[in-house]
Length: 331
Image: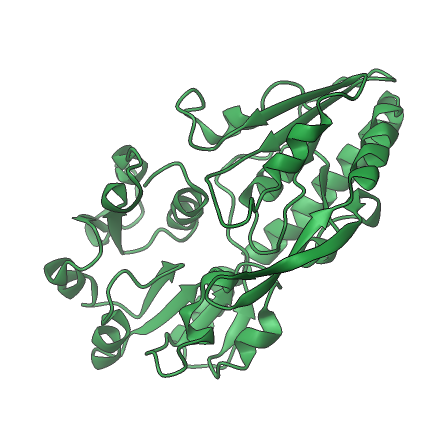
């Protein structure tokens, strides 16, 4: 329940699935972040008010909280980590299936094959899908929902000007979001560059990050994986410029993709490739968007809305797959 990608991801799942039980982990002991407990205050007009409960724990290994959690359920969903080293075992004893939505680069099962595994992997993107399938756990791609409401407000675009937004996010291995690359672009005539962070207190609502009449979101990320700002910007009808690597290549239009060069390997839970986005490619793409008039730019916004509509269709897989699990059918 904090202003991180994981915080927004799990809050959106809570809103989508309306679970019977929710165990909320206070992350302050891990990252020092302020918490937003009101995210999980239940409204009064629920269809099943007597069956929905929320509990809180400070940190991960609270046995009492997890004993409460693994009772009377069919399925448990958790994102990134299980939050208790015996969650899978505890759930298995009660006949409960556990779904983990992992960060592919942080999935510990790649280098710890004997580690107890969940019953299913629901990947947030296509990144590392083939490698995950080799772990022997039923795996599907099931992207997270976005809590922000889609926006269709007009954005005005004059020829020769471009307002660019970059979301720095929290500090991650190897300058993941490419913020240091973006900082080198502040000398382009006609291009107004703004860098914002999810964790800033002056953006109490997630959609506030994207307000300001921005024309494009620039995210020259160094490696793949789930990118919540990409999905959030698309929900607002904003074109997103990203490197031509997976999973971006499977989502975004070709003319938004930026040429990259292999840079190095990074060690997370496994070796991953890190890329540097070509500065010439970034500048030329920004120039192309800068030279667009209103009509041309509106065509790009239509593409963004179409890509987000595809994402919304994919989000419907959550309930479909969960129902199949409860019915004992294969995914």
